Length: 349
Image (cartoon, rainbow, N blue to C red):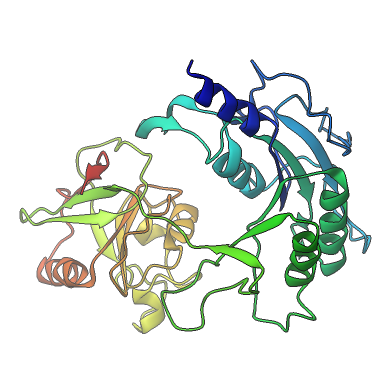
């Protein structure tokens, strides 16, 4: 290994990234400590054990949790019960993990921005949220523990810098020469939608990727449409009967709520075993699953390239394709069993 590369690895290995989040799952492959040397001598932090959190390693060198307002919390320990903290930790400093995928989708090597760095987790968020006191206490500890950079993927409504705990905590870390990197939030791209805008914070936007996650729909009349979704299911049958929310209503009078498949508006007898087309895209997969539906097709209100996993086979099509599906349903006298919902591999764009 060239001396410059070796030197860079040594510097990275002595870099400690402090994360304020929902905790961490140390046994994830991204945090394997094989090949790591001892913990950097500058580290002054702790690894707090408890419940089913058994300890740290030479990769995840610190873990604390905070509940200063004494809320009733599940599993008081640094363990991650949500998944968000593990996700952000691996994004920042996860080691390279080969053949990573979601049931074969998007297979490749997953790695963090600085894969050789060490990680210290400060669990400040629970099911009830993230309190100001816990955030400020975690900033204080991270600064005194000796982290080199603080990463905070937490946000909320805009507040005065004198009232915002992230702005206050990051200001103190800046005074100690420690940069705080924060997420810009999950909203936008609209004016005023960026969060964590204090001038002493490095505010980071989301990135894009070189692929889409799509699921194809084919109707009995030969029409095909490609929707956006992370569909991890393989169809058990080649064809399914198709129905829309209005015809699956549990009341005789049709209304907008039926078409949208809102909770409580549909009949299990009409939904069971069928693909259901719903106007809008607001988590109808949960409703259709409860009613024992075979799958769900929803329509997007606006174009998007962001895909989400569904709890049953499902996809979200563009509004124009949704309109064509609706016309097909309305033009078919009887529901026919020749509609398919097929899982598709990601495509490169």
